[in-house]
Length: 433
Image (cartoon, rainbow, N blue to C red):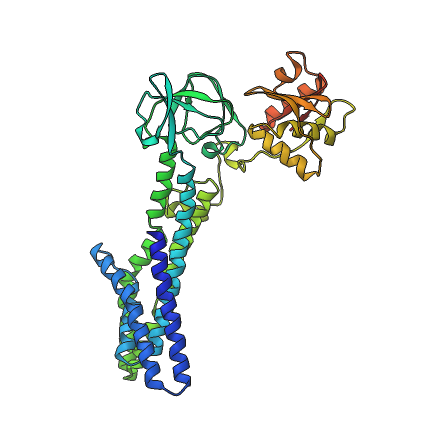
């Protein structure tokens, strides 16, 4: 639908450009009557979409400022000012095409949300695992979510799991969920495969609700749009009074038409919807759900912002802040060893550690004898050295942390950051913050 509308508006714009250009060339060639015919046809073609929009508005019992544009076009045709009418048609078609383009982009980014939603689920049926369309999920169904898949519907966990909930909460750190916990659709399984019992259908799930919020927001009119339409009840009559006043004073219909042409409110009609749709779509792309244009405009008047948690202030992607070492090992070497092992890990933090090593220009080695335990850590051999990273219990084997390591863990808890401890050859060698 959006693509069709964009193509129609684009064709309208092309006709207007061609009409104005061809008419100008014919005029310069000396065929003034032929030029007026070309501009007149261009004006008529430009009036058709405008009339259709006004008819649709009247059907909704709405009165908009685009009436001025219609009066101006009719006046141009009636007073043989075909060039002015063609220019108005060009202005309207340009603005309409820009609006369609913005609307198309907005729905393209909304489509990204829809494409991220799973289309199929893995459901246990008679002791076997079957792949079914997500719409067939019923309350109480037992589902299986593979590593890296998006949780399809809300459900209760049958086992412990590690989830990436950044798409829902903004928190970049993975979250550990225990057996019996409620997990929301839209989270990504960052650990091993998990089983859950569905507590909602696909239509009633959390992620489907987020998509509906974005769709509803893009359908709503912002206060500025409603304000422009409300002012149309005043703006249109005032414009006509001024136009007829100019006619009464000068006895010149061209003066009457000039007032209408100048008052043609293309910016008022088009600028606000483009800005609102663009703002909502950009926010959706960055993971921010805006419920409507009114909320977006209210935000522009805000002077103080209050956030309910730190997660809303993160970028959604964990970034390396520091590398702490507890012995003679160099920080870059510690990071290189950790990143080498994390190359084969599916953990959310692993990608950030590998990326940080690449940004420092460190040459990574492919690990051997890798053993990853979801929710605990990963271990492997890098260039003949035993490397382990993850939780303290996994890295130390249940042993006691050095004093410096305890200080780092306490500091990260206080400032809301995360740390991954790294062990080399059986000894805890440092931490990545």
